[in-house]
Length: 492
Image 1 (cartoon, rainbow, N blue to C red):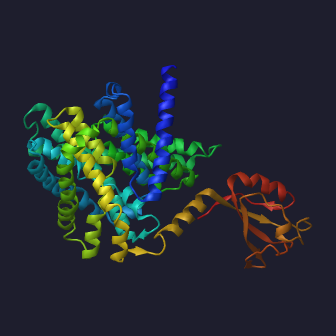
Image 2 (image 1 turned 60 degrees about the vertical axis):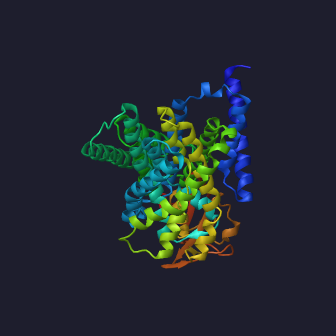
Image 3 (image 1 turned 90 degrees about the vertical axis):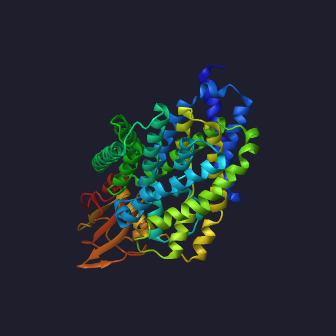
């Protein structure tokens, strides 16, 4: 077999296995990433030479790009209005909260693992990044109150740039062997990275909004190509300018989510599927670097640090960073408990592997334990805790708004005037061969609006308001060719 055919078969097996693992684990209530990592371990065991092909450098770059796609998907589900609503508490959690949690986890790692302070700090930073997607996946059909959902989602999208910046500083220190940057220089570098990420993200998002609003593409499948291109452009441009590509790509998704987006549902489904694919690949790649026989050596310290992250570091960081915001004790405890770890800690610790810091193999395995225990302990109880604290609501907070947004962007309103002598006059609506995906939602007659039924008979002079997909407008014109069919108008 050629190399291309071998790679194709391996990728197919990985993706199909990942799909079945995700489906099975969803039914059993267990985190799917456990199965993905186990699959990676099994593949590495079958081919011990795999690590020569998948080097830490390749794994780091691949995982960084995967995380960018996950963040863009999160941004597309977070509108600017939601960001503004919880901006300050979310930013406090993403900055002060990350610093506090990293400091506590660094001290715990140094005490438990007896590693140098630098290696311990890398573990502390990696364990401080949270993943809102894991929270909402664990909640299932339970709808969290809007404010809490927004805080968790915006925090998870903005704390990744903070943790990656801290990891960059630590990697620089590890490579030079001395503090390469003074505190003032660190502050300037932070401002520059975040400023570039902010500027590129907003600019790319605005450009993407204009493109989607102006685009009249023949095939709905081309719209996700536009959004994917904007995500890659945003991430790549920010990274090439030494800015935060992760902040840029997240903001690009947020800004684009706030604008008119043709085929929004198709775009969202595409990026949701892409996010799942890259998560499967990312965790399988992590499995390549784990040696199951070494788990026994790190199981106890790994569990100690996992429980330290869950019960000490995260609660302390949440209470400290939300001290000056209006929140109930139940909300603070829930935010602390809902700080599930996901893909970001894996990507972060791969930077330590690439830099070959002291004890990097143990760091990977310990971070795996932290993520695993977080997914099991917190993920399987977060729904129960939300209900216990009364933080859920019966319906999704913005489901109606989202449905209206989809309807507004997927359909147009077509006004039709039934002219005198029209063969349609006197017929019932149900007898007219309306094209698929159309709906006559109002008949205006004599200055009054009538809510039509199938039995409603059309009269001369009636004004029909028809909701239709853009592709059905020409068919409507053919159906009512003797009548006056107005130009299709976007819904307000």
